[in-house]
Image 1 (cartoon, one colour):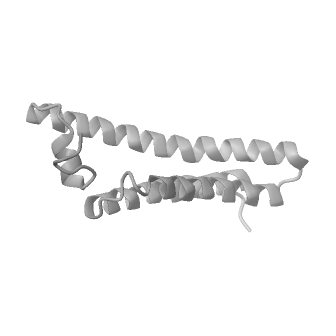
Image 2 (cartoon, helix red, strand yellow):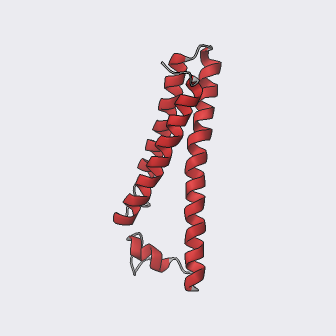
Length: 121
């Protein structure tokens, strides 16, 4: 089919999928205030991507459970690394915006996102 090794195809596809998922989540967060109520769903979907990649590898690479376990760890390193890097980048950008405004209060941001209302303490 192709000369590209199977692991590169599997984890390359996972990396691209997770990156697109992060971009999709960013777009959704701008339109819908889904955090923190649906954070669990975001995590479940991301974990499912990683486990699907590991399961696919487990069915196509010989080696028993040791190879499958290595595939699971590698999938979480690839998928989790990309999502963590994305979230850290978002946090850095947010902190820069906060510093430019001269306010460290997150209340206004929480109210803007619909996470917090004025009476919450």
